[in-house]
Length: 234
Image (cartoon, rainbow, N blue to C red; front, side, top):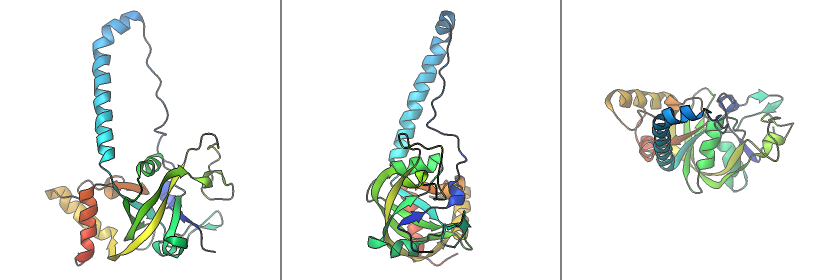
């Protein structure tokens, strides 16, 4: 298949399985008596919601590193090869491409949180040996993913409208290969060790939210994983 000018994230991981987090919840209704008797409970609930939102915002703001999955091996879907490995990114003009095709709301929202110059691991998925192959950086923040409107594209979404698009993408640029391939199997060993005894990978999204094709990393998680390139595999 001719080289693409856009990157392809893992379609297996990107299938929409989550409920839409953007959907608004219906408000509860009640009569005057209910308003009086429920005032304290609702006030407490509102307070809790405010605190939760504050905590969510603080948590969101702490993420400045990412892990992004893509398939390095050929796989035909609807007559199209969805293969896109780190070598394909390197081969693009300026070693830069758009990370399209994400069809999971949580993964999409993580991309919308990304900022220019933040780093991400390029993770090879759905292949013989999954793992981290290299580093890239965000060079353009989230904007409308055009593939959602393309009927010939494997990621076409007929429910998404031009005046209210559902899906976003970012532009990424190749930085470098990791000094060695860091496999999923190796990362899992550290995750289990850290989960049992404490350590930076104990809550790593790669294992707690495994199906997400775009995942956040804390600075501590990112630094630990990157340090493994200087260590012998276990």
